[in-house]
Length: 300
Ligand SMILES: Nc1ncnc2c1ncn2[C@@H]1O[C@H](COP(=O)(O)OP(=O)(O)OP(=O)(O)O)[C@@H](O)[C@H]1O
Ligand SMILES: [Mg+2]
Image (cartoon, rainbow, N blue to C red; front, side, top):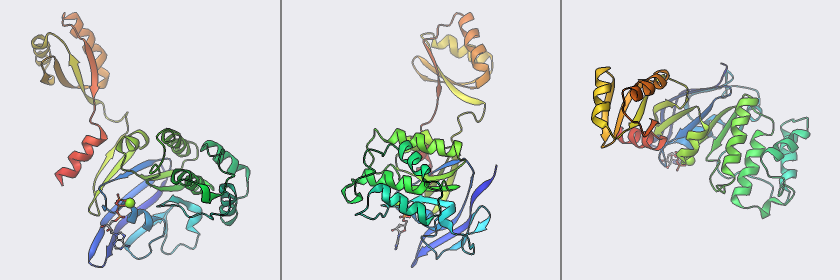
């Protein structure tokens, strides 16, 4: 796995207030990382540092092993970003704005603009003047501009802010596709945890300027899982599990939760029914990201 972004020991203060402290982070190509945390935690500040919008900080940011403080390459080519409201020329159309950005970033093939416009589904308004755009329309044009040159790293600060819920899945699909097909590394912040959960490989929890936890959301990782078994014969099922020395707990009048290896589940269900214990339902119990978030933030 090629590392695209490495953040080393970033500390940033505004006056006496430390807003980031000893932040370390790494993103590989094709990886989508979610950045979550309360208002004022330092998400936007970190993203501004990574995109060189903020230049005074201690620590280092490496993009493809080049320190952005000393790199002579134009970072605009290796990082695409949408941070806060994107700035466009209001009297030009969205398309003309994209053409302009494509030109200054040295993009050769204009067909790629049409491809991006199409995949973001903005073709119905891209030829109207930007001054007539709503917040959500500007936001989507902002994403188009950020990915125009298919940069290896994409930084999105609350990209779904102001978006109509019907558009959000399309944007998610677009970002996932970029990561998969173009190997783009993506850092995305959002307060909508269900969104992060559906899109990201990993979540970074940040609170008061510090990274307090990194959690992998990879669905295939780890074999152990918690499974809920619903039955009318709760006592019999408890005995069944205890006999097999399985770690289980009665969680409701008709429910037992048991920690097992995922590959053992099919055999287990079939042995339970052979033992004449009826099962009404069997499902994997997963903590939602919202629960993990609340638990993590509370424990600090
Ligand atoms: N220009 C500035 N001058 C002084 N303090 C600032 C400045 N910009 C941000 N801060 C402070 O830095 C801290 C982190 O702000 P930041 O915008 O990074 O938070 P955030 O995690 O993005 O929050 P939100 O979820 O509300 O977007 C806050 O306490 C904020 O008040
Ligand atoms: Mg912010």
